[in-house]
Image (tube, rainbow, N blue to C red):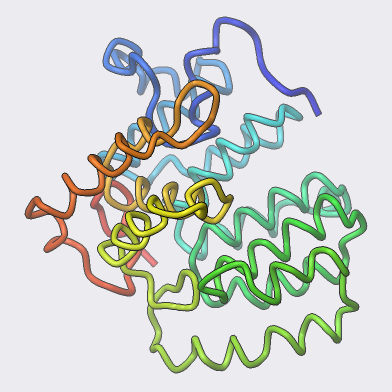
Length: 280
């Protein structure tokens, strides 16, 4: 896959890392018109802005954008917005329309991320099915195990470490089943890291990890992405230009959220996108 798009779209590539774009106030002018005549990046940016305003009606356009592209960052950005703002039905519809594309290793890699971003317990079965048809121990199989771990484990434990051994399907099911049974006891809400998804609790956990080496982990990055998507809090300052964690800046962002009245707006077990409940 191509690693990046044309230079004129460079402003939008940060959508592969989060939901904010540098200088977006200027770029946002007339963005809605770009839905139909813009580049793939501009269209994703416009969809992102609409969803941030609580308008999820254009999310189905993500499918066409991704099917039209083999660019790595486009797929990451598209999966981020669809996984974070899409209902479970929207996610299932996207996968159903993949057709023979699901036979391609890198497509399965991004589908695994899509299921993980949903924070939906139904994603566990879909990830197990994806693992059963996986082929590359360092790509799609590895990512599928990561996503199962993010949903079912509070830290990098057995499922996460199984990436080094690549268990057979039956062995993976054996690892997953007791964890699945546990999350089923939590009720019908969304899940993340073996708990009911709770954006306030997630913020507190991110703050705890900033005090440890866990802040450099992929698990911390995923938590930050879900926190930003749900609350709309701009977490761009969490990382510097080299991709390293900026602990002081990140802690200031989290403390600003926790000290505000924003936490009262979020109900445990529900998914939000920029504070807007996601229809499910």
